[in-house]
Length: 284
Image (tube, rainbow, N blue to C red; front, side, top):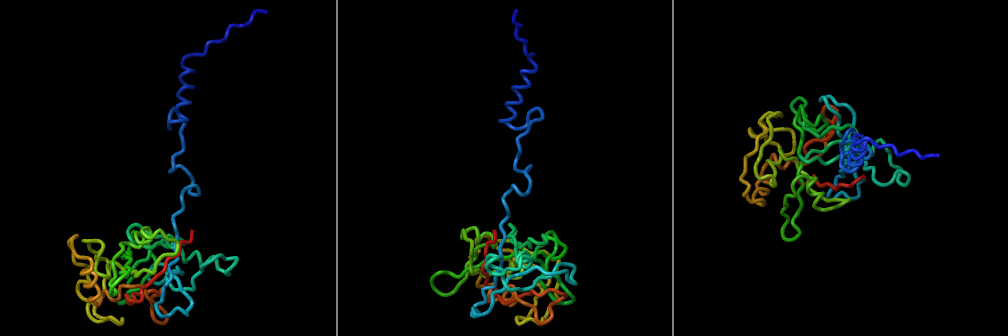
């Protein structure tokens, strides 16, 4: 039998096959597309690191360590913060409560914010009556979302802290899983932060000028307005920090505890700078 002559492949079909092959290598071509990172499901993307923030408690090593913890809705329109025994270690070995551990996980945002992973909200300053308290709120407001800096003592000579920048910068520089201890200070409360060179804080929080109930008591006009002095980038860092320590407001720029039953249902407030020492433990 006479064999059939091979059927000629139309030029258009050959072109489509060629484009399809190119598409597998080069991305989007005639409807064929290689997945980009943004197209992948969340589970396939690198996880954002989470940290537990444990109070270092100088001179109180015998006490059970406590960590910053997200709570329930408070009366300031946010979610409360409180201190709870740190849920460190593996649950099967150490009897960790998974729900509390989840409430103790925070991400370190690039702008210096602490974001609670369980609820997706950021640590902020809320005003309840005439009192300030820290709770959790929307990371873009309302309320003044707090920015936190990390300081560390010089390794030699008299104790003089040096700024490490925002907390995430300190952790990145140290390449650590168990990090610190760091002196953690609230940027606006501490006078703008030595590492920032220049900058200010918004005017969206208020306090009454005069004497407060806190141990370091005077609230000046600049603090009432949420203002800080603008600085030259060449401003000497050590002089800047020394000036911060002379400020009554700055001496209460750490994270501490409220007294008694809390403030509007939240239990974290301005604390003495000297006691705002923290270890950070990476949980991922």
